[in-house]
Image 1 (cartoon, rainbow over the protein chains, first blue to last red):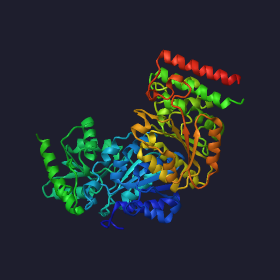
Image 2 (image 1 turned 90 degrees about the horizontal axis):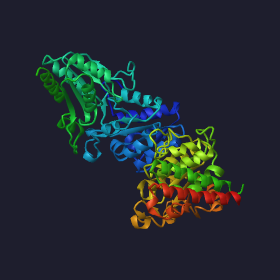
Image 3 (image 1 turned 60 degrees about the vertical axis):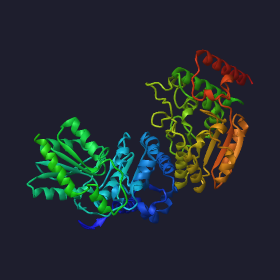
Image 4 (image 1 turned 180 degrees about the vertical axis):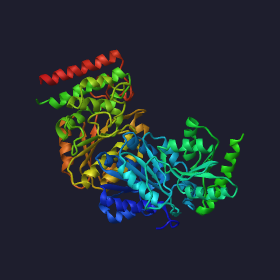
Length: 316
Length: 277
């Protein structure tokens, strides 16, 4: 893998598990989706530590809690829709409340799931998980970040929700220099007119938007927020103070994910004009991933447009 | 003493009712019905250490019907995990004794439960973990008969048989009543034994207040290899307090002062009979 090469973060997840399985006593669970979530990569190497629950996500998450209560690190995997959605209450009560060491590997998040359509395009998982006290939520942007996030989750004592995608996405980070720290935003580019705060597959679009904006004489900063919770309040406040306008970008409903989390921080620290790129409180639909991303406004062009609008709001 | 376990059960019944009475809320019916079973487990069967409640290879008990926390706390206190004085602080804002079991706050509680159907899955996870590590600790899960209306119980039932969790013993409090009335009228889950047999479980049916039957059933369950066991215990909801027995209304209601005093005097009477036997 080199910068620009494409790989889906679900692939990175499976590879990371198989690698970490050598060093750590981890148990991996799946609910009949191991070929899609890529936990089968772990299964092939460590069949004795792979537990298939069949199509029973609620049972999987509560069982994971029981295994974790005996001192093991458990990864439980399904599609984001069925992990965060269907099994929400099991995650809240069996895992979140007792703060057990369960990592939820949720793949197929977002509209880039594509052809399967609205029932499988989870656009609310970050919001759902944000409501659980003590839950860490990580939404990595590329292969390097996803790999680092899985290891960070292993080392962290407590529940973690890891959000991965189905669509191959370009590698944007250099694996030799990349450092991952839970809860720390990453300043990818400095700028003085506005800041784009992006997460997941929107990060490269944010960088592209910065280039587009240069043509209009706009100097936009870019921040990568891989940890949605606990969110890096300091980097967000600093961006607001220094650039005076914020645009968030996420492959998620703007009403409960990154956009909401950033808005909460701004309101409590340094209110500045802010706009949110993401799905606008609508369900998705079937289509090719890239067609859908464009249609729902998850593009560099739409981010750039929103940056201009946010800057215009500053002068009112 | 011949009756020592039963004496603990009756003392625990009193402690549970004291907590419920002081809190003016809680679940007496299902607490009283499983007191005898819990007493046999905690005083005769389980490998546990009140001085070291997190002992790595201890036997575990998951109260899947978490609303019966009052009797679990009472039994743990009787067993020495914490002071029996604490039982009267049940459900109070300054107490560790939450309305439903909290494994983080209460010594001896092995899993946080309360949302029905989840505890049996967690118990499966513990039993599976023992298998993965080649350890021989046992896991007990206490289910309510109303609780088995939750679909997750049957997901868990499939799982336990699939993974041959013969170190798991589920015990079903078959008292026949749930909040809205007779389980056969609210949502008929019978025949329960045939359902679990069809899910490839070893099924044992007993009288849940007969100590020898409880003991023998647990022993029999441990002898079975390659499949999980469920003990379907026919119990009397509210057992030990005459006016609470077999009344769905006492599922989640606290006694008033007069009722409480009558209940305690009935339990005291039973206790002094046991102590002089």
